[in-house]
Picture 1: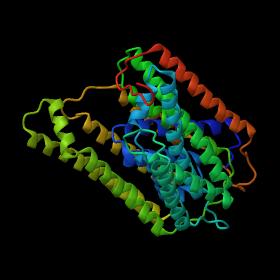
Picture 2: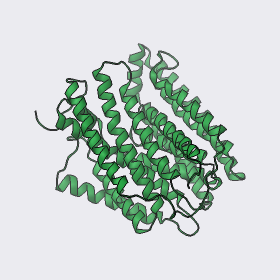
Picture 3: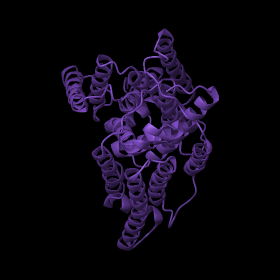
Picture 4: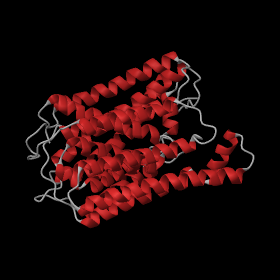
Amino acid sequence: MMIHNKNQKWLSILVVMMTLGASWAIRGRFGHEYGAAWAGSLGVLAMVLISGRKDWLKNWLSIAAIGAIGWGMTGMISYGKVIGYGKSNDWLNASYGLLSLFLIGGLFGFLGGGLTGLMLETSEKKKPDWAALITQMVAGGVIFWGFLIHQLEWFMTPPRSELWAACLGAAFALAWYLKRNQFESAFFTAMTTMLGAGFGFGFGNFLQTMGQGMQIGINWWNVMEYSIGFFGGLGMAYGIFSRRWPAMIVLPRSSSAWSALLLFILIPVWVITNVFETGKIERMAAEAGVSDLQVFSNGIYLQVFVVSLLAMGVMYYCWRQSRTGETRKKIVLIAFVAGFLWYQMLKLITSGIFGYYHWSMEELTVLNFIAVVFLISTSHIRAPQGSSMTSVDLGKGFYWLWFMVLILLVLLAGISSSLYTGLAGTELRFGL
């Protein structure tokens, strides 16, 4: 899909960047696979909306669900210590940290962008064999994890989980599948998203280090999370809006039903049961200075129940509307807004919105999202369809860009490591 007007193309890209940035910043409160899955689905849904493609709107649930799976998969990686390496005052450790974050962020992007692109490239003439692909990705993950970690003992974050190797194996399997079966647009999108998200994570760590070093009192972890989403959104949207995509087939209703189950029930339940478990509510009560834990807990659970019930009601309405007739942009936009507000409210509940809440810079994500909704609702972009083989291809310039990004991250590590020492959370991978 190549948008002819360059201004329209970059407007579309900006919408996806802002959406994935804001949702990834909120994801910082939830973490893990479930938080990344929700953030990824929202970024992909913004892409569907701003594209104006009727065939994509008809399949909005399935596209958002595969985006959730792709972006969420890499959430299993432990990267807390890697971020600590990036804060080191030793150039070698700082470089190792930023380059490792480039790899981790890149895996988020490759799997998220690649699987989303594969869904978009599903046409009447060419359909992915999802069962075969999943089998190959699982096998690739097991083989890489076993060989790199247990055989070579190539540890990135000892003594923490080394599941980055499993994600790397899954990414290699996906790349091989895309190239072998000539899903060129999906591969292109995977590569551009990998570059964007990889740079975003490393650069976000640099911003966090500099901000803490200058003692600027804001949530720099949040800034780092926004950075990976923002630049990951840039990579994914650029990849998608720089290609021509074939007309997508209307997927069966069963696909819509399973996607709704994943997005509206399984992921939210996963988020809620992990974020509002007993130990975390006890810490919230201690922060609020509450003496009666039972009353406080009941209040929290009631807030979560009411917010979730309302959001699920809106989601169910949108799902029913999309099954009974032609899917309208308005219906998908309602689901998009409801999905964002649902998780925004869950985040605010963890911040004590109905008790001890204090405003923080994190709430700027709301202004960010208002701007996104305005741009989507007022845009009249209609992206053309066409053969996926007649558009921008990866060339030497792209790989030179990769090399320059890696060099830039090493230079940024040199800057931060020479300016600050003793920052909170600093870790050393090499040396004493």
